[in-house]
Length: 340
Image (cartoon, rainbow, N blue to C red; front, side, top):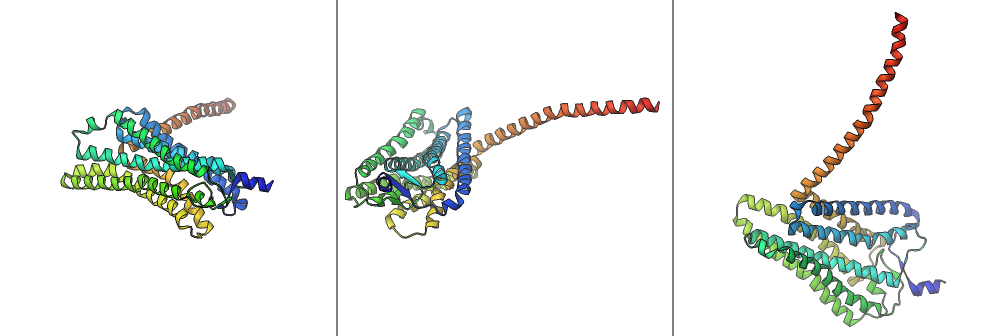
């Protein structure tokens, strides 16, 4: 049975004392998953409902947050099952699928960030041409390309990996990420070259483009008034923070498989959890706090909820107070009649 299991399944070896702390891991990750879904979905719903936020910048932010929800949904359910299971295993086909979703969404994230940088560049540096350049049709084309191009690039690598034989069935991690390639018997020159080309297209090129656009924005705003500089900082700073955060985590993810160093299991687990936990929660916090219009609508939403809860509390408490008054009056009446 074990031999058949080793042929069909891959074992995750990145968990640290999972049998001892399984319920603690499960509660922490389940809470994080609920927070990711709720925080990202709330901002997306606000952008969809409020017509004032139907602008290219906010549409791209919504797409980025949807990306985070899809990214987490591809990882968390399986991870939560593993915490409660005796054996942390995954089928080879399921691992390939998770690997495909993981890198498709990671690649589309860089594409979306570069499109957002271009949107800010046109808005600040070419404000008169902005309505003609960033039309709704153009925005939808960018969104479609962000997901389809990334999916096509990663699907070729997935098909090339799927036809190769495995010699190792133990994965040094908790999800199917870049370390998955170390399971193959022999490294493929075609796959390595193609992977390098895709990596250059997906990461360094968008990052260089983003840095170029923000450098141009910085030069233009430096010559402008203080108000223009303030508005540029308010809209561009959140994008830069998200870019820096995601770039650092992606660099670690890529280097982990390429260097093949004996990194301690605890360090691997912490870094893997940062990638799947920290980043999906980081996006809604940054855009919810730093983007003025989104923050304003969030404050209104939570103040309304607080108002409704307080109204319900007073509605339910008033009858109780009236009942108490009536009971006290009824108790006092006999005392008055006796004294008379």
